[in-house]
Every structure is written in structure tokens, then in C-alpha cells.
Length: 318
Image (cartoon, rainbow, N blue to C red; front, side, top):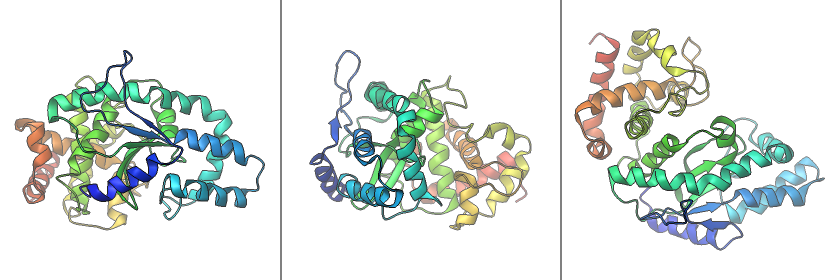
């Protein structure tokens, strides 16, 4: 975030390709006050899938990466977000005929869902201006939404395939608020890789989604993936929260991944339980602070508040 000049170069390259540059509209056709454009690359995935049917796997994978090298530089090639990523790409291509209807339904309603989410988000945080277009992609099972570092900088991306799988037809406004907050927060809180930074980033985004959608369920707040996180943590708060205190400054994947990614901790706590822990912390810190104040808090102010909150919430010894 913040590297606007580099981002604009990527935007220019993307808009020059065959991807469709869509600007969000309401059902009545009204423009958002400060519209966030998005680039639809789902159509490009569909086009490649159709033209490459019948190719051998190795040749198809190589052609796929070449096809997207100019359309989405550095996303499908040059990184490996999880083991077996190439196999996941091939699987996504092969399963496209069965998944197409659900994924294209997400694509078709994306703009109409984004507009009211943007409006209500801006009512709290002010206009969203000078952001590059959001990218809507087939993520090969990697994510429903999030920021990814591409050659031109960090971009907000949504995976239509995972949205179709885990969100279905439900109201996804809380999910959009979560991701829009990451876009906003990245301008004031970045280059922080310690475990406590993840607690703050993800916990605060979840808390913001809750505050903007007080009736949202844990399902809508993504606190049920891969299993319900709230009961797993609340079963023994002390056991869930207190060990994190000693790990707050860790930058080790072994410490961080169980809290925020799909890797199990090896104990009783499920993957991603850090989202709920972070939410608890953000809710306590935020109980007497406006959301805009929380979003602007510097790292040196946040770090001690997180530790103190964990100790209080978990009843941890000093």
C-alpha cells in the first residue's frame, strides 16, 4: 500500500488488456459517490479454459501462465501460496464447467454488492479515493478476498471461486467491509510482520465489519472457517490467549500460520483462531474509541495495548 505511482503503472497495463474494467453501479444504475472500479479477470479465465481444452496438463499449465503473464503479472506464476498450487490451477481449469454457473453468478452481482458496502463504509471513514481498481479473479482455491503483493505493489483482490463456495447467496456486505478496511488501513499501518501486527490487522478488520453490521452472524464475519472459532477459544480463554503473549513479537511462520492461515496448531485450537482472538482484542481496545481513531493508531501505541488486552481477557499472569 502507499506505492501509488507503481500501482498506477500496473493499472494501465491491466486496462490495456482484454480484461473488462467495470465500475460499480446500483440496481438503478446510480454511480457510487467515489466509485471503486474493478477489473474482471474471471472472463479471461473462462476464455483460456475454453481455448485450452484437450491440451496435456504440462502444456496447458505453461500456456496458462503465459496467457496471464501480461493480464495479471506475478499472480499465477512467480509465487507458490500453498503446496500443490500448480495442481490446483489445473484442477480449477478442469472443474470450470461444473463451477462456472456459481462463479459467474458471483461476478455478475459483484458490483451491485460492492456499492452499498462502499457507501456505508464511507459514511464511517470518509471517501475512498485514489485507489487502483480491485481485481476479481479465479483464485484456484486460494482466497475469497485479501491483499496480494504483485510486481507493481499490493492489490486488493477477490476470488470469485472461493466466494461462491463459502459465501453462497448470503449478504456479503460484512465481508466487503472487512476487505475495504484492509485497503484503507494499509495506508497507515504497513510494513509490520510480527504476530501482533496480524492480530491487529485481522482483528480490527473483523471488529469493523461487526460494528458496521451489528446483526452480522459469525458466519458472515468469517469466524466459522474452517470451523466455528468462537466456541473453540471460549472453551478455555486462558489456554487460547495467554501463550500468544510470549509470541507477540515473533515473525516465525510456525507461530503465525496457525493463528491466521489454514495450518493447524497441533493442539486443540483450530486454524485461523487468531481472527477471533484479534477480534476480542480489537473490541476491548475499541470500546471507548471511534473506529477512525482505531484505524489511525500508530504501531508504537497499539503494541502495548494489545499485550495488556490479552492479559486482561485471558486472565494471564504478568
